[in-house]
Image 1 (cartoon, rainbow, N blue to C red):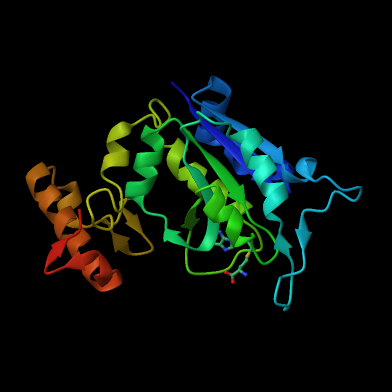
Image 2: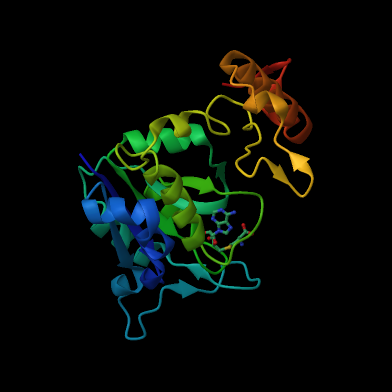
Length: 232
Ligand code: SAH
C-alpha cells in the first residue's frame, strides 16, 4: 500500500520540488508514495478563471472562493476517499511528530494550499478540513508548508530511510531533543571529541547521550518537559 498525496494549489509547478530529490525523490520513483498536484484554477467557472474575491466586510487582500475550492476538493477526494483533508494554515494545530506518524500510517492526504488572505470559512466547515500549521510565522502560501509536511511523512514510509534505527532515536521520537553528534577528525580547531565517545564503553556512551539529551531539552525546550518528565 502506498501513500497517496493530492495537493490542491495555484502553483502545481512547485511540486514535487525538493521532494523529487534524495530519499523522497527515490521513494516517489519507486512508487512508495504518489503525488498529484492539482491546479485549483482549473475548477473556476468564469471566463477569467477567478479563484479569489474581495473579503466580505471589507479590508485588505483577497479570499479564496468556497465554490471553486469545493469543486477542486470534490474532484481530488470523491465520496469514499478515506484520506484526511488538510488545510495548511497558520491558525491550525501545530504539526507534531505524532501527527506525522499517524499520517504516514494512513492511506495518504488531500492537502489544500492557501494563498492571499486565506480561504472562505464555509469551505473549511463544509468539507471538514483539518487546519495544520507548520509554525508560528506567516508564509506567502501553503505550498512550502505542504512540502514540509510531506517531507516529514515520506521519510517514515517503509523502506524510505535506509537505517530505520536512526529515525527512532531522533529529536521528538522519545519526547527529547537529540544529543550532539561528532565524527572525525578526532580534533577540530583544538576541540577534541568528548572522551566518553571514544571509550568504547557502550553503556557509558548511552548514559552520556541520555544526560545530554535531557539537559538540552530542559534549557532549549522547557515546554517539552512536564513535571520533570518528558512528554512521550
Ligand atoms: N491572513 C492569514 C495568513 C495568510 S498566508 C492569517 O493572518 O492567518 C497565505 C496562506 O499561506 C495561508 O492560507 C496558508 O495556506 C499558508 N500559510 C501561511 N503560514 C502558514 C503556516 N505557518 N503554516 C501553514 N500554512 C501557512
